Length: 529
Ligand SMILES: Cc1cc2nc3c(=O)[nH]c(=O)nc-3n(C[C@H](O)[C@H](O)[C@H](O)COP(=O)(O)OP(=O)(O)OC[C@H]3O[C@@H](n4cnc5c(N)ncnc54)[C@H](O)[C@@H]3O)c2cc1C
Image 1 (cartoon, helix red, strand yellow):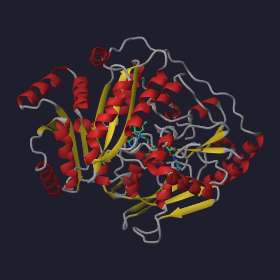
Image 2: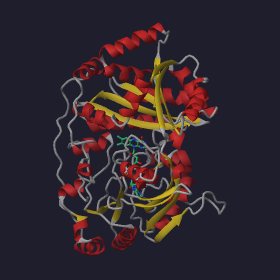
Image 3: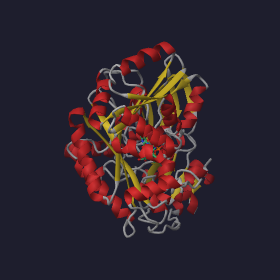
Image 4: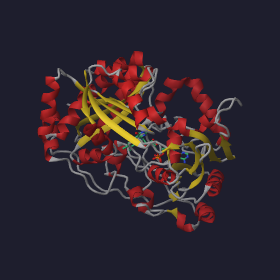
């Protein structure tokens, strides 16, 4: 348990080294000028732990000596998250800060004791769920311990009448779904990091899953939280709705481990759908396609999964499919008069055929001009929905700089934001392919999720992406949010004042100061130092 193999995988998503198919590699070389030359990678070793003897003794006393890891692999396995820069760092390129110890408490009471003890000892604490942060959220500081919640992996209770479940924070999403399925329920939260991310991590980052249009964002699913802070334990959320002052649950949802350690989350659950139907459509041109998604959202007929790729993302996904299938599809779409195909995936997860027929018909009536590609394409997307991180590994192994970033804005500014971010990324990377999709739509606006691919710089691989990311963040400032679902972490913290104002940051700092006066919880995350 303590040394789950995948948790030690900090330089890749899985332990099967993936390869790009030859036709995909050929295509990439043509498109981007990718060659075989890139900075060679090497392994990483951990410096010796400097955990003071006194701290070791106290922590051993709380969780047991077996659950305080100071060995190199144990600490490297919880060093950093899984952004492109984190993956590069674990391949020996860039900066890494390794924690002095990994502490694995068994239950909420032990978490509370560890947090209190660390405040007294002056040790910084980095809460660690699945470690899938892509914004530096689990970056260790000097003199810090990582508090790994892996042992808090239990379904505490299911209230079938109220459709609620209490889940421990370290439960991975697949384990939570499996446990809930035994009662006939689902959470319906399926981010692309589903396989590795945890319930506490979702709450701490305001995560959004691929089916957010149907099931809501993670914060919509949270009925209550139990949190250990250096000042003691707090529990927020005791009723489905309340007028008892500001909703303090939302101080914890999105607090990124800076205000407390979430130990349990009470979540809203739904019956497992009896029918899942996914279909693919193509619309002509990004503007028209985005308008169609706006109509679905504003007329409240979004499918549970609604995902629209722009022209470049559609082109790349068809090209990487390769072969006759892609050529045939291209010819068919031309015949149907589609010049700039944008792929739209709609997925419905419903109780019965009647509900499906009604919801599908309502959506179809807003999709005039869409070419239906059918269920095969929709199902192919559903089955491959968690392949993104594996493809990223394969691209990195082929010498590609590949990273994503996301934002959101109102419909009236969506195209401006789209153009600005694309321009920023294109201008700061050489011969890149910039792709974008909308995967979360609301009545008032939508998210934009960008993927950038470019040949990896030989001289400065980390700086290459840092410059592109800075340019994109500057383009976003003032129009969109710095993060729709990846959170703030270290990477976005400098842009937070631009979004919530200096006074907003002061409010957050005051909350932190109240709950964590010694400032030991995840320093530098959410609030810039
Ligand atoms: C390939 C890939 C795809 C992704 N796709 C999505 C996506 O589709 N949607 C999405 O929303 N996100 C996505 N992410 C981002 C990431 O998975 C989410 O932010 C996720 O919510 C993090 O969960 P985790 O358990 O891995 O948290 P971690 O990465 O361990 O931690 C994230 C932050 O929360 C804090 N934290 C973790 N657990 C606790 C706790 N119990 N109490 C207090 N603080 C805590 C950490 O200190 C850190 O600041 C993706 C990441 C990757 C690598």
